[in-house]
Length: 358
Ligand SMILES: *Cc1c(COP(=O)(O)O)cnc(C)c1O
Image (tube, rainbow, N blue to C red):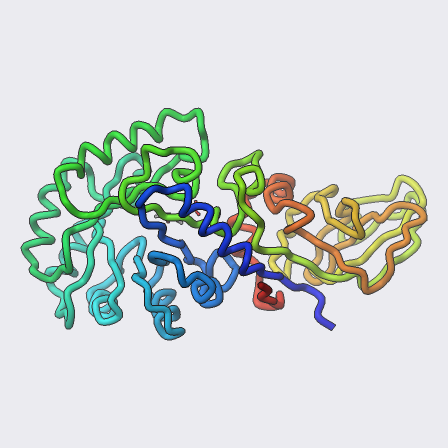
């Protein structure tokens, strides 16, 4: 019997992509599928999005996997190539790369490319992680063009640090800086992530990059994807493997971290940190069972989670349990655990069976 399972709703995925694309005017929408599509399976996600203008990943291995699966749309390497040999592979596979520092520029100058490559210059407008400084842009552009190895015009991209915070002044500053540094160039420009697409119209430029939102999840704390018009794509489920009467004042689980206040029913679910559910989930983290929310009670173990089903519970061994998805927003669960939905979804292990539905 299959217990731990992530059900991936590819129809919801398509609807989210189309919903975001319709928000845009003529801009292109990149579907970000790094990290195995945020834990959803990048090949299945990419195949389910024939309408996607482009895909983006973080490592060349992720792009190679998509090409080997027959994905033919443009694929952008968000952090570029990490060595000259990878750049040669990227050109061969017609990937788009990023130049963000002297070393990546030197690799482009030195590489022996079989085909011209599309290049995006990554500009640091305030994240201060990777990217060239705005005053260095013109120097980089001339050096990139001088290599004679690029396809089309140099593109420009930058990344927001606080776009999920609607009150932060940083986003408007980043937009202004990006405009100032790149407006004299003809190449395509890209700044918006999911939060940019949802909340910052001035950030659209020619190309937008949607990650978390295409999976139906909100980029903002305290909000759910549904509140932005999105539908959750992943539902993480498992099953009750034991239902047990439990006496008042008796503890449950490792280190006896929880003790029942009254006689109750304990449900044991086949899912644990071995499936990627965080061991740090505190008492009271919500779980959806037979139409109601029940609290995790006792420590998350490797293979099992215990919940307090309450006195006189009617739940039976074999019943379905939902950890997040259609009935319980992943945003709510993440807030209880003190993390963000991105981390919960991407950390699922291979023991979790994936089922793709339409
Ligand atoms: C991951 C990533 C995105 C997508 O971010 P979301 O918040 O998931 O939309 C966009 N751009 C870059 C550079 C990224 O690394």
